[in-house]
Length: 408
Image (cartoon, rainbow, N blue to C red; front, side, top):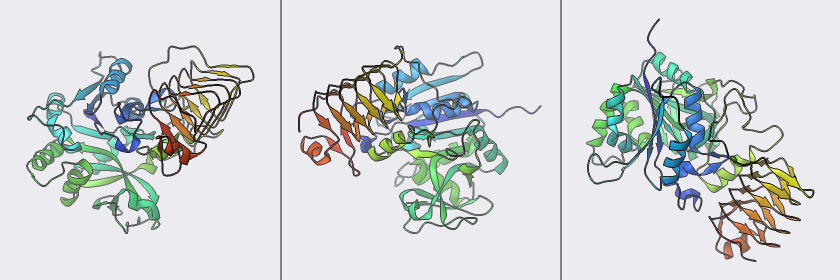
C-alpha cells in the first residue's frame, strides 16, 4: 500500500478584522463568537480535523489572547499519532517586525514547515462559515500535479467584482488571478458565473518554499497570499482551480450544498446567523456526520418560564427566557430575557441581559450588554447612531462589550 502523503495545515488567523468592529475591539476576528457556542475559528478547524488533517498550526497576531486560550483549551487532540492544533504567535524570528502580510506570516514561520517536512501544505483562512472535506481538495491537488491549487466557489458574474476572481480554462489551469475585476470572466460551462477565490490554498511544499523565498526578496511586494503568491504560481502555469461544487460532505442537505459565507462585515455576520435559524436552515449546525466542534458549555440547559417562548431561534445552555419572546435570533450562553421583552432577528452574545419590557430588533449585542427595562435597541437605527452605537449599511445596530443601553 502506498504511503499516505504528509500534510501540514496552516490556518491564517492574524488579521485585525476592522470591518467587524466593535466585535473585534479587544479580540481577534477568528475568536469572535458565532452560532451560539462556537468561535469563527472552530469552523475551519472542524473541516480540517473531520477530513483527517490533524497537524495544524494557527498563525496569530493581533489581540490574540482569547483566541490562543480557546485553541489551547478546546482543540486538544490525542498526541499518540502526532496530532496537534497549536497557536503560533508572531515571533519576530527575522527581526523586530510584525507580519507584513499573509505570505510574510508563513515566511516568518518557515520553521514550522522545516520541522514537519510535509509533502503538501494546506493554507486556509480562519474567518469563513462553510463545510468542506479538505481531503478531497488534497487529492485533486495531487492528481493535478501542480504547485498550487486554489479553491473557487461559483458566484453570479454580476456579483463577482467583489471578490478575487479565478480565470481558469476547461482543464482547470488558472490563466489569470484577478483582484476585484470590473468585468469578471465567465466560466466555460456557465458564462453567467465566475470563480471567486475562497482564500483556501494547497501547495506542494517545495514549490511553496521557493516562491515564499523569492517573494521575501521583492521590495515592492505586499507579501500577500492572494495578491502576490498565487499570481506568481499562475505566471508560471503552475496553478489550478478546485471547484467547490465538486466537494461532497457527509450529511449535508441539498440546500446547504456549496454554502460558503465570508463574515468579514457586520451585515454578513448578521446574515450568516439568520441562515442558521429557519426550519430548513441554509447552514445546518446539526449535521452529526460532519460536526462543528468546540468546547462544551458547562451550564444547565436553557430554561423557559412564565410563558417565555422562542421561535425559529437557537438558544444556548445557561439561558433563561422568563416571560420574554425570542424570534429568529441566536443567543449565546447565559443570556437572560425577562418578562414582556422581545428579541427579534438579533444575535446576543454571552451574559447579555434584556430586562422587562425591553425590545431588541435587528441588533448584535456583545458580551455583558444590559438592555434596561423598557429600553429599545435596533428599532430605530438613526436613534442608535445618535447614541453612539455602530450601525451597519443595512441598519444592523451593534453594541460593544459591557455597555448598558441608554434610553433613546
